[in-house]
Length: 180
Image (tube, rainbow, N blue to C red; front, side, top):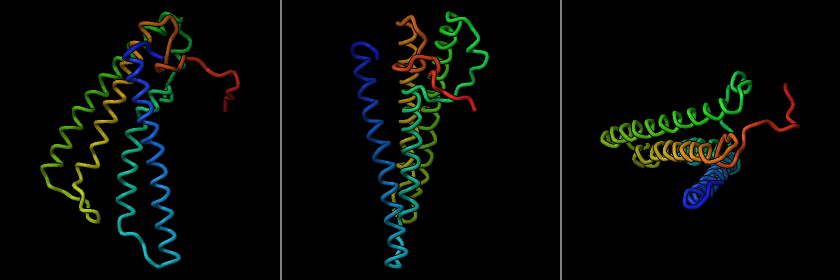
């Protein structure tokens, strides 16, 4: 955990992510089950189910990338990295998190440009009549939150002697992991 103000920001973002992910998955499940019940019992299918689930999938995906970064659950190709001495791994982790944060912020910037183009097109969802650009607002938010998370991980690695995958996750493997 980061100290002070940065730690408070990290904790707040983590709580918001958890609520968004839990609510999104629950709403998607309720929407899908409700539609199945309506279709098979009442012979009536909800006209909006597909669009609502599409919105929720986008929300869950882009809230989930920040969540994965926060918990050190991102994909790692670490065969060479793991063989390096600790000081080199630490330097590499700082470099990796800086580059990843900058990449996420760049993707955030480009996604805002894309959303602006979609907004100017005037497209709306056919069933719900919601402007399409509104469902894409999760994209830059997800990239920004992920960029912030990687930037905070950079700070954590600079401040601490150990190597961290995220602000709360030390690098390494659990002893009970089984190789498949």
